Image (cartoon, rainbow, N blue to C red; front, side):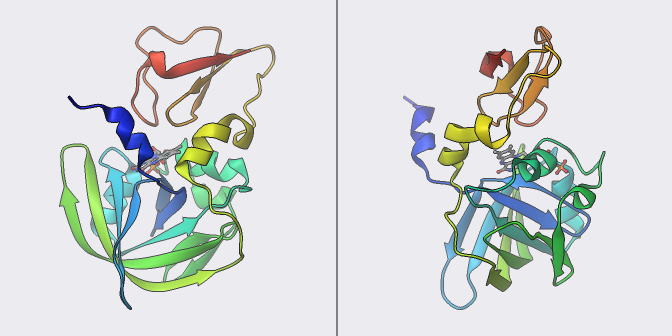
Length: 199
Ligand SMILES: Cc1cc2nc3c(=O)[nH]c(=O)nc-3n(C[C@H](O)[C@H](O)[C@H](O)COP(=O)(O)O)c2cc1C
């Protein structure tokens, strides 16, 4: 028996992962050692441009999102690829150790990449914390909170009488009367059965 529902009980947060020239939304982040030089692990899909960048770059940063974050940040970094747009033109950032971090966040961690563990779908990047700071005290957004409130956070509205189809796994929105037969979510790769219609 392999009941994958149990995975939903692992608590995850919501972050913008950035590196030199790009970045994306991630929830697969964990602190894997403590002490003065903690290690942070982040898992990035091989198909993401951020993954390509992190194979050649030496650093990454994680900006921690709060429950009141502007949903445009999640749309920009989570529903688009830096192959197609300049994400940093759309969102206010500041530079720390040569990496852009998100101004509208609780704070950030900048890490030096010390290891990369590759599997067939994802790469686990392990970083040593070199810089970190807090901008404000605010309630961090958990992945569970995002799942529960994503339609409000992303302000999913129907446009010009079009129907919106929302991916129940990641929140990606497709506009159109019907989903194409072989449609797969461009963000998480799941099929059309994961989409809920919003009229
Ligand atoms: C809520 C949410 C959580 C996500 N978590 C991850 C994650 O942990 N790892 C990952 O590689 N992609 C994750 N993604 C998907 C990327 O953010 C998305 O594919 C992005 O468009 C990739 O952009 P890039 O091609 O510029 O790297 C997540 C997206 C959303 C909306």
